Length: 55
Image 1 (cartoon, rainbow, N blue to C red):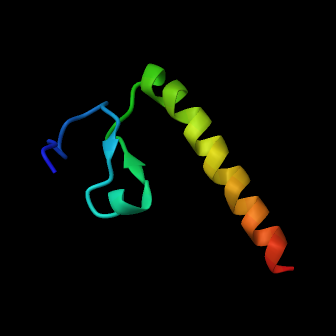
Image 2: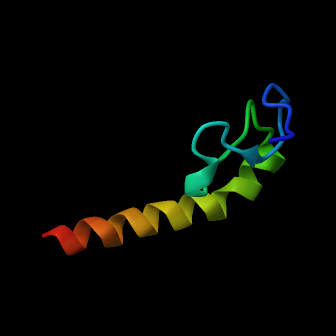
């Protein structure tokens, strides 16, 4: 990948798990963290649904 994985406050593909759709950000600012909230909520909802199917 052609990304600088040391760059701060920028959403980029995860250096190891990008193939799984993961993203990463180093030292996010408040603005960047607000941008991440929908992704965090989606991942949390997906995890809850996946767990509930196991029961």
